[in-house]
Image 1 (spheres, rainbow, N blue to C red):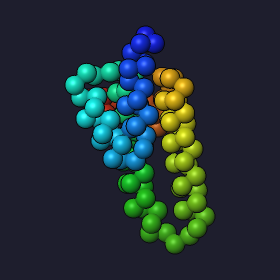
Image 2: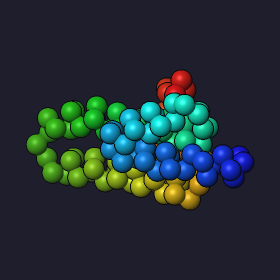
Image 3: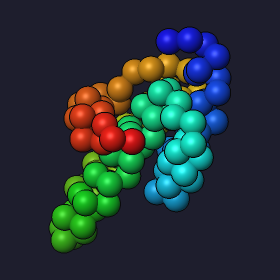
Length: 108
């Protein structure tokens, strides 16, 4: 991918990983000029955020700190991987679920 395209979309890519609000801000910022690099990371972040919320509802029914801890560690690792890729200007999907998010949110 062209380094100029990556540099133009880098800010939105980084913003998208900061909670669901950051993802919405990045989607709105990227709506005028569809940057493919920013769109890639927005899809990854949106998938992580929606999956986190959906699974958090299920995990909240368990009253076990081991399950909750494993849940948070799993998402922290995925979130850190995606954010570090955005900072390092890499175009690499998140492990395990990244390709699924790309297919699911391909309209963004």
